[in-house]
Image (cartoon, rainbow, N blue to C red; front, side):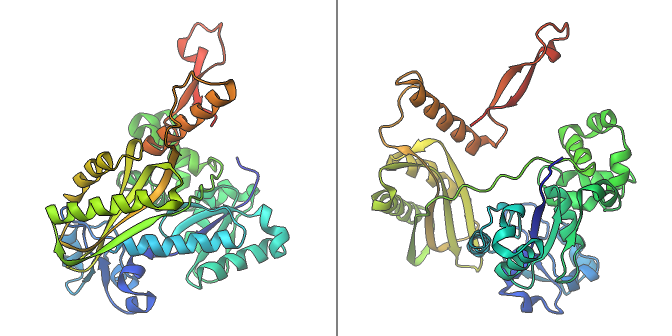
Length: 397
């Protein structure tokens, strides 16, 4: 278990508030984020008035309308959400924190290193609330999951703080619905509730083998979280942001959009701030004619600086646009190595090879996640059981 205290900052209904134009737009109105065009017909975030009438986030659209016939639908605004959330994360960085953004409206950071700056724990929590605004709910615990459960319990401006000695007892009383806020355990909530498992304490009481057999790795992780175990925080890597956008004289689609995309790629590669670096991940966005926005993250198979290959990779994503666009944007999310620096792994000195190996591991993790690069570690070479001789551990980058 982690020995330091983690602060969880939660902004409820963040995506709906941004799409509706502010928290006042939700006051007394039954609203929900409209289902994504072409996707599964389920509503997104819902307002308090809609929730009081039985509408829940993720509910089928037909069932939501049956429960609340006057339910208002708000077009999703992923581009606006990304911009507002980036400002919020930068505000946390402005108080000295190294935040780990989990999803729009939810971030974690370690508190101990900020006590001297803000005069203790209460000062840190007050600074976080000032940075994020009065709607922020703040929870504190020795792990990010415990801090999340505490933040979800908050109903006022006063933070909920859980000490290390009380973690298991506190988590045991929390509902399994807290798992919805972790991407890798969200799908477990519905089957657990069907099986009669209502609290995290009931989940923790189940045998590890039984949970693993029924739910696999997500179930094992959920049980570990319920027992107060979690991994340390990982603050985000701050990258210089480059962005190009272009307004369309007429609503664009098809070949017109591809020509605009080619122009954006050329402009982005010509920016002097790029300093010869390749591009590893970009964000393609659009403002739609029929209200709302669209945003798609694209990770290249290898870091690129060739405009032709970038256009080929990005033009395929234009087919995912749900409606004609009136503006198109392209932004760099992650840079790669400089042009011409991609030598073979065995060339150069040991330090250079180590640097290229770390760079390769970083590229793999961008594409496939933090656990994508593992190494074999010999722990018991004399064991007769092959699984005990060698274990897989994260590759140190």
